[in-house]
Amino acid sequence: MDIYKPYIKSDASPKHLVLVGRIVTVVLVLAGCLWSPIVSKFEGGLYFFLQIYWGFVIPGVVAVFVFGIIWKKVPASAAIWGMLLNIPVYGILLLLMPDVSYLHHMEITFIVIALFIIAMTKAKPLEIPVKFPIRNEIRLKTSNTVKIWSALLIVFTVCLYIIFF
Image 1 (cartoon, rainbow, N blue to C red):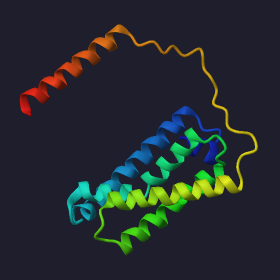
Image 2: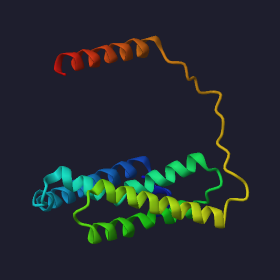
Image 3: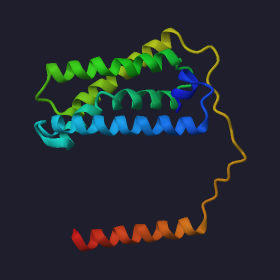
């Protein structure tokens, strides 16, 4: 709906949006069903498949998120190009170093993207740093129920460690 209503049909009714959502859901489920035999033949199984192919997304997203939080002058173009750079860098690493762990590929990809974002920000930083809004209307006090359940969960986890280790 974030794409359909603003870019395809801005005057869509809620009923129409629900219909489109259902159709898209059916199409994606069918695509997943058709894709599953391919994944099942992947050497290493589903878990290994997911780990390897998350590398095409995760390093770029993490780099953009980290630099967006810690450095207020990173331009949007550095973030966008950083995420797009993730795909070819990770793909090239998979081709050139097939015997290296996917985690190392992701680490190298993150470093390349981080260096790219730093270079782009140094070359053309935002003139006015991003300022995050302060929201005083949000209540950040933890309820007693949450505190009690958190304490019980910690005690339960410690007990499991004592029993099994």
